[in-house]
Amino acid sequence: SQTIHQWPATLVQPVGSPLSLECTVEGTSNPNLYWYRQAAGRGLQLLFYSVGIGQISSEVPQNLSASRPQDRQFILSSKKLLLSDSGFYLCAWVWGDTDTQYFGPGTRLTVL
Amino acid sequence: GNSVTQMEGPVTLSEEAFLTINCTYTATGYPSLFWYVQYPGEGLQLLLKATKADDKGSNKGFEATYRKETTSFHLEKGSVQVSDSAVYFCAPPVHMDTGRRALTFGSGTRLQVQP
Image 1: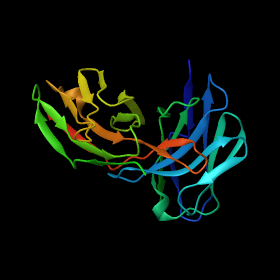
Image 2 (image 1 turned 45 degrees about the vertical axis):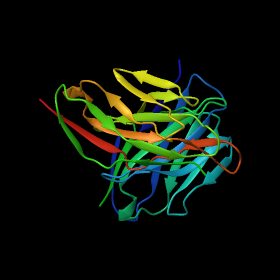
Image 3 (image 1 turned 90 degrees about the vertical axis):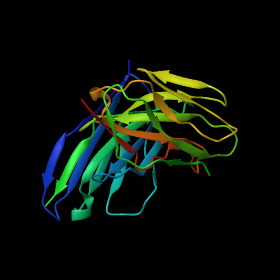
């Protein structure tokens, strides 16, 4: 069966520090991968998606970047965090041509 | 493009009450429609889906019927429990520039069930 992992689960970082969040998927190959952010009490904002290794599309220009160094690994990064980067970051994957997204457990990021 | 309009919360109900969360959509053709649920502190879980018009999705006592006449996909449950307290998201697929799809999510509807 397929599983999706995210780490860390929680993170507290100072403003201006770098960020690296990791997402890995097991049990499937060549998934579409997605990064979302959910601000407190708000909906999900799609940040990045990837249809393959090294292929990243950005939905919203901002202080973040994403990379896909391996087929089942998706990394969200920042060189300098802003207060507005605080939120709940969710990774998701889609298998094949289906429309159903499966979400990881999320990373709660607090920037102080 | 495809989009949804979902009723705003919070919705507060007593245990065993009837639940309806409204969702209407605009779409090209008849795409799949989804309801996701997010329990406190967790990621989103697929609750149910319908892949074509007039389909009914159901899971854990929740139901939603894909109605093309009213372009709606309302979520219903006959008798809610405290454990149903969560945020519920209605979503259609969205076509990306590469032709691959990702779901767009609104702010969701928070449901609070009181004992």
